[in-house]
Amino acid sequence: VSCKITELILIFFMNDLVIAAINTVNISVNAYCKFIEPNDTKATKANQYGYCISKNAWSLIFDEPEAKGSIIDHFVKIKWQDNFETDSRFVYYGKETRNECRLTRFGRGFPFRSEDNVGDLLIICRMDKDEYSNYILSTDEDIEDFLAAFNISPEQTNQLIDKKCSYKSEAGIEELFGKFIDRYADFPLTIEMAEYARVCFAKALGKTDELIKGNYDEALLGWIDTEYKLFKAFEMKCYKDRLKEPFLNMDELLAFSNTILNRRKSRAGKSLEYHLAHIFTSAGLRFETQVVTEGKKKPDFIFPGSKEYHNINFPKDKLICLGAKTTCKDRWRQILNEANEVKVKHLFTLQRGISKNQLSEMQQENVRLIVPASYLQYFDEKYRSEIMTLSAFNSFVREKQN
Image (cartoon, rainbow, N blue to C red; front, side):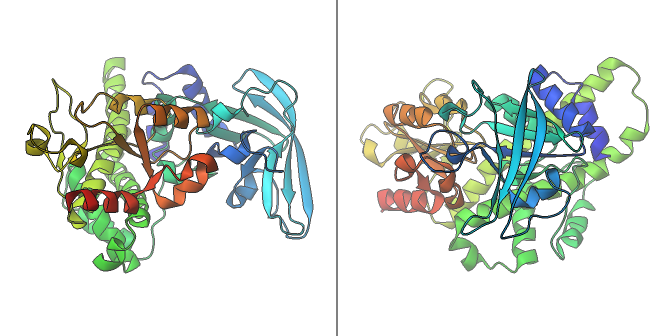
């Protein structure tokens, strides 16, 4: 069912490069994707060279897992963007303190390892033993379309792509999913799905409210991962019977494909807002969502709320505006004019790294980035001190409101 859904999504309008990448993943032996990090490029002065490949994806490269204490290489031919080829090398470094795999040897003039490629999505498809087809997606829209096609979150990158779009549940969580799914004949509201994902995460892993409150950064990623799995389970139920019947015409097929893709992308964005709202409520912060600021502008979050924002006597330095975006390579600029009374805008994202140029632009435009604590490592060291974790942001708001 899930494979059929992915095929249908391709009928809906997408960038040709994204369609090519999705098609190639589907016909590959196996495939992998990751966000390009600073140490994958020439952005750092570290000794490493080439794209770092997660060790959990060894089957993408080698016939057997790498052995510590050795250096193993695999020479391959790679077609990039369906446009040009390189004779490249996968190499595993297992001697002394090193324990990593990298893709190296790109030749002169290779266009995808500059500092500006940080935050791009790298897709590696193994077509044969020594032949690969790779793609680089750069825009938020292309990246989100690709991730939506396989129904994976930014957190589920840096690993092999599950082409069947299935889900692997922790012990006990599948039973919890079943109890919830049986209540509905169709997809529930996103806010209901987000809430139940938090319940499942807590019960399956034995996480008490106090443990979750102690580490919202980690909990948020767990909630998102659980909700993606829950949503996949709903897709299996809701689309199974429909896909057994032929479509009467192309319009019906396009409409159905459009519905699938839009539901995936819309749910991902809204659920992030719902999870953040739950965190802010649990932390005892005062806020409102979708407050009308000026004209028709509606930022995702205003702290403390609409009344204070529109009160000319309320101290402006006590107002906080927060946007929430799953990716933000291009879209961070959308928050600049959402609240004229707030000088410094805050933006939460699940983006794993962006270029130094963009981070510099953010500073110049008074945008403060917020990411889960474990994501800080994906941003250039020079700017990490300026990026807040979710826990740090909560403390920042609490101090303002106290």
